[in-house]
Length: 97
Image (cartoon, rainbow, N blue to C red):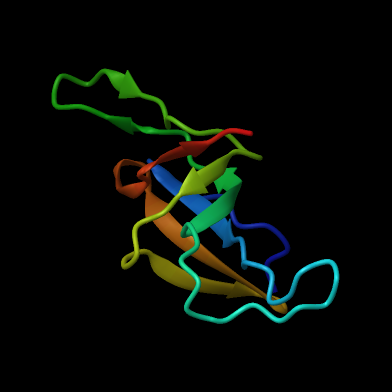
């Protein structure tokens, strides 16, 4: 069993951030509340090369919070945790506090 997955080329391994189901005071939140589809970058590949052979690095780094598309990615299960593998160009943006 693999303990760590290192993506190849320009792929990024994301752990999805699940929105809270209730508030700090215990009020249950409805499932239909619109939340950002976001995740935390767990691992990144080294990047890819363009047609001229120039190296293009991945635009995010480990630990970044990113905005994800609603559909896409490849589901990966490592142990008990589930991750999603995206190409760098599929990530919509980074989220900052």
